[in-house]
Each structure stands twice: as C-alpha cells, then as structure tokens.
Amino acid sequence: MAREPTFATDALNNEQIAAYLARIQLPASLAQSVPSLELLSEDTTVMHVPREAWSGPSQPIVLRSALTAAFERIVTQHAGGYCWANNPTFAALLRGLGFRVSECATKVFKNWANLDPTDTVVKDKWGTITHVVLVVDWTGSGERYVLDVGFGGGGCPIPMPLREGATVAGLNPFEAWTMRHEPLPHDPADTPPIDIIPGWTMYRRTSSSPSGFASHPAPPTLDEPSTWAHQYHFPPCLDHNTRHRLDGVRRARARGDTGGARDIEYVAMETGPMRVFLEKEFGFVFDP
Image 1 (tube, rainbow, N blue to C red):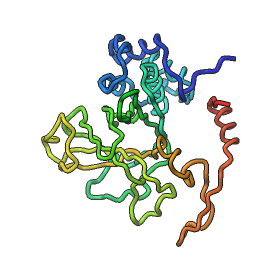
Image 2: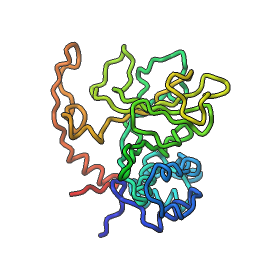
Image 3: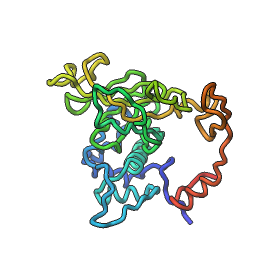
Image 4: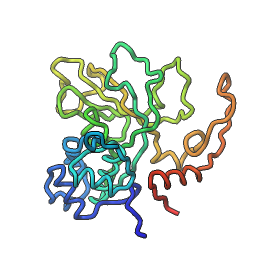
C-alpha cells in the first residue's frame, strides 16, 4: 500500500504548488523563482487562510495529521485550519519551491492578547507545547527565518530573522515583532522550568504612541516606547542536539527531589508505546 504523504519531509508537486499559489492569489510564475528572502516575503497565506476548523452546523471537528487531508481542506475547499495544518502545509509548499524547512514545536503564552502593561507577572501563563512554527533557509541564505501562518490575527506576517534582537514591522504602524534568545521567561517567584537551555521567544510589540512607531515601515528600534507581550517560545532544536547534552530536553524525564538543592537524575524515556499510539490514533507514519 502506498504511503500517505506526511508533514515531516514532503513537498508539494508542481500541480499542487500552482493550486496553492492560486488559493492565496499569487501568480503561478512565482514557482519558477529561485529561493530568496524576496520570494519568501511574497507569501499572503495569513490573509487568505484563516485559523479555524469549522465544518458546518453541528458537524464534528476531525483532526487529521496527513498532508493530503490538510491540503484538501485548505486549498481545494478554501477553508482554514489550526496551526498544525496551516504551517506544515505551507512548509510543504516551501519545500516544493526549493526552501529548507524545519517544523518546531512551541509553547504559547496564554495571555498574549490580553496583556496588562502594568502587570509583568508571567506565572502560570505559559501553556504546554501546542503550537508549531517554521524555521526556513536556503542555499546561500546566510540566515534562518521564522515563519508562522497559523497563529491567527496576532501572528507575525513577515519572515523574522532567527537572531537575537531581530525586529520586523507589521502591516500597520502600530505593531511589530521582536525575537529574543533566552531561557523560557518566568516569574522569579515561580519554580524555574526544568528545561533551562535558552531558546527563542517571539514578542509582539504594540506602540505606546497614538501615531504608531516613528520608524514605520522600517522595524522600530528596541528602545522605542512600546508594550511587549510574549507570544511563543521554542527550544533551539536545530543547533542544540549536536553540541550539547540532551538531559532534560529530549526523551528524558526528571526523577528525584525537585526542592532545595534539586537533586535530580534524568531517566531515558521509552518512546515505543508513544509511537504505537500516534500511528494507531492519528495515522502518523515514521521512518523505520
């Protein structure tokens, strides 16, 4: 039986690329372009593919992990999806266009849209890993970029350089986004997270001035008056694995006393049962 396409490494073919570009109202001729920041910046997915999973009155929501199902819903049915459908389908488009794409699981800051500028406490406001973003580069790019077409209306619509302090302007003069390389932000009174290795945090910035950022459409400087809200955080999975120990980061569980001196040992996790569960319940396909 032929393997159903999955999100991991698959790329759209030429016919699918043309259909996707038509869906987001871009010319098919873009498929002939070589990978570049200019081509990456042409994307209009966030303007045409909503973050939603509505199927009709009283219809159940069916979550599908296969690329074919997500492509059918987004491109053929002109519907939307959640992040784990929108972003991986967009990743397949980018691979078809010649880009290199990694899909990174992220934690979302649950209070990003209702941030009180006078309340900087972040305790208990980080969710579990429920989101996915894309990290993209190409031969000769010299830099990697974060893209997210599945966050909804508050997401960054511009390729964000994966670099400390990188800032991009939004589509209006009142918002921008900033990338910071740091451990997961947490309140000093909160218990520090076990995974203390620095990762990447995306911040949404709204201007404190009634007229917006003075430097728009150029990215505002880090010191311009603004309110910052954490949006999501993900570990540096692209460069961490080959240079650091993985204790507490991947396929390991903390065991021991977590108080006082934090006498902890990490025990390797058995991943076989989880693989069987994902294959059976969600249709995941793993390489042998």
